Length: 614
Image 1 (tube, rainbow, N blue to C red):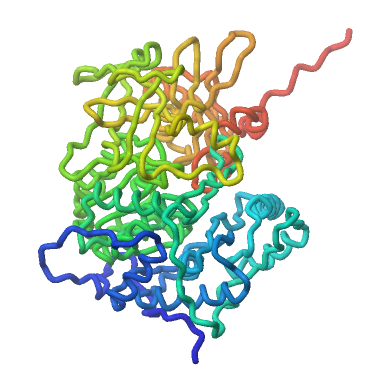
Image 2 (spheres, rainbow, N blue to C red):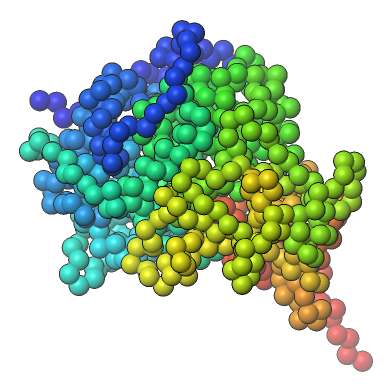
């Protein structure tokens, strides 16, 4: 019997001018029905349900860096995951064991993830080694997570298995915990006793995702089957998903917006997803849009910077023949949404069929599985122009009359709470504030996480009386949420609160500044008794005169765009600013280690004057 997984290798797919439609998406005109989630209580049951009721339906399309296409039907997926699950069980993995997964976007990753569920084991997601993190640092983080989890096994991309073995050579498990075995998917294809998936309690942990460490050390977010399925269903209902929908995903699958919002929510509804490796998008952003074209895709989740990258990096010659008219939901989430990005993307790609109605500004977080709020179908796209002074001094969201203003702050609405989620805005003492007053966002409901794994102190710090204290700041207007920023990122200068996003967006428009590579932070100044505003920006410029001009331009653009003048601008080389594995700036680290970044400044400081001895 062949041990090869069941997959459809269909050869290369063109993702550029002249590309046609994939045969499976050349749809005959018909009225779609509303997509419904599978009638199940766990993700494993969903895999079995679709594999048995729709075995020939394509569920996953994978496009690799060479633009080769691999297709998995629902039947293929069930067959492959059952075989992997049977082999995991034969290797000693049991119901309740933790299994660490470390993969790039691939069929193997999702098959291993789902196979864990079919055994009743808990998949735990970590990133692969990358150029941003040293191999030594990755190994240290891996050992710490394995020790915390008491993992039974680690499944990893074959290209990195040697690094995993090296990291484990220095690993000593906690007393009573097993030494995990390391395997690649090809190690798990032998014949094994057929697997009968166990019946899982809805309150059991479906998976553990480690927070990306934007502000603190990474923590393991435990998500139950109940919370996962509730959030997947709410995302589909809130987005008005239809039976002919297809999702495109290029986001990392070890984070919630890539794995859950894009792939698992679609899987629960029996809808297909087309996947690209993250590097495939970053290397060539037009690949994303041509994937939308080739599969007549209707939906995609992406952070704001990705839409801005398309505006700045894609050349007109790359767009010949592009058709985005099937795109019904352009989810914009995970970071501050800039109104000018939304406008520029719509203007640039409108001639290719993209419509403003497609925008779905959203808000979410891993502790609520992923989705919290979203603009619903048929609701207006709300953008407010506020008085920056009123927000900074009184924390009131006061709208300005139409027209040019020097005191304006533009904020995008991110919709209403999804089904099953309650939302409240409170002040520093935890008391609810009126509409149009800024405060901390509190959440509770069916999607609430089960706590941080083996970390009751961290759990108690954010869960109080059943409410999740998010650390995010926002206000409500007409029942819709508007996000202002994170409390830990606030810059307080002379008693006024300034959010970094507006300043970073303004600086990012300056020619020579790298898109998405600007950090605005507040640094204590003992002499003035308040915070200095420091803008750290990456640039490829190297000539001193050009750098000085760039810094002046950044300073002036920030003042014009944000109404406050930075105390200093620090230009640094590319790849200098630290980011989380999900691509978010580590502002807290930059703020705490500002001397390190000032030492990297490309502007050479004049040497100190030489003392003259008479």
